[in-house]
Amino acid sequence: MHLGSTIADRFVIERLAGRGGMGEVYRGLDRSTGQPVAIKVLHEHWDASLARFGREALILDRLDHPRIARHVAEGVLPSGEPYLVMEWLDGEDLASRLAGGRMRAEDSVALALSVAEALGALHERGIVHRGLKPSNVFLVGGRVDRIKILDLGVVHVEASTRRTAARTRLGTSGYMAPEQALGAKELDARADVFALGCVLFACLTGGPPFAAATTAATLTKVLFEAPPRLRDRVPGAPPALDALLSRMLSKYPGERPRDGHAAAAMLRAIDEERTPVVASQGAS
Figure 1 (cartoon, rainbow, N blue to C red):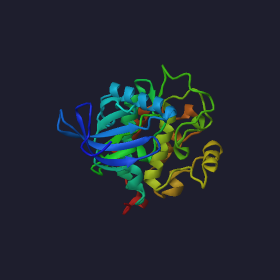
Figure 2 (tube, helix red, strand yellow):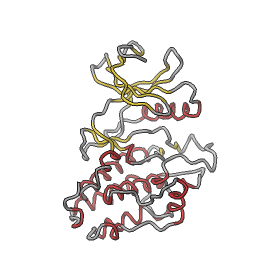
Figure 3 (spheres, rainbow, N blue to C red):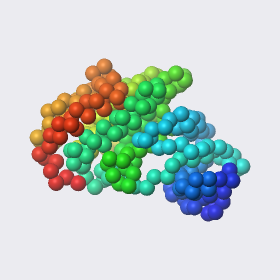
C-alpha cells in the first residue's frame, strides 16, 4: 500500500493513519462519493484475526445506526490481504479524552445514554459487542453528544457463534464482565451493560472501577472484589445514578438492566432530572 494507489478502482490511498498488531488503517478517498474513508488492511498471516475481521465486515454490513461506525465496503487485495472500508471519523476516542481527567456528570450521563442506545441496536439483533471500552467509543469532532461505536471484531452473534470455546476470553480486563472473564461459552447483552457501567464509572471518576497493575490482578478484582460505589468516589453523586451504576456493575447478570435499551431508559430518566453532581463542578 502506498500513497496514490487505488483499491477496487474506487478507494484512493491518501496516508497511513495507524498501525497495530492486526494490520494498518489508511485514510482514503472514495472516488464514487468524494468522501474520506478509513481502510483497514489485515496482515495476511494473522489467521486468528481473519475470522474476527470478516465477522466485523458482516455485522457492519447488516447495521445502519447513527451511533455505529458505517460500513462502506470490503474485499481482498490482489496481494491476498483482506480489507474493510468504513466511514472516516475526525475527532478523538474516549480514552484520549479521559487521559485529561474525568468528565462533567451531565456529559458522562449523556454519553453513556448514547452508547446504551447503540448497544440496544446491537442487542435487538442478537449481537453482543464484548469489547466495549473507552478506546472503542469515538467522539466525532471531539463532542460527547456525537459518538460512534467502533471495533465489532469481537462481537458475539447469539445465533451463529455458539461454538466459541469455553474458557476463551475476548475483551479488555478492566471492562470485562465477570462471566466473560471466566470464559463463559454463552454471553448475552448484560455483559455489555456491565462494560457500559465501567465506561460510565470511568467518565465520572477518571478511572475504571476495577484496576490493578497487571491483567491477572485486574481480573481478580472483577471476579471477587465488590464494585466500588460512585458515592464513595464522587461525594454528592445523585442517589439514582449511584444505584443504577451499582446494578450495572453487579457480579450477577440477573441484577443488571437486561440490555442496552433498558439501560438507556434508566439513563434517560436520570438525564432528564438534570441533577448536578456537586463534586464534579469544574471537572474537565
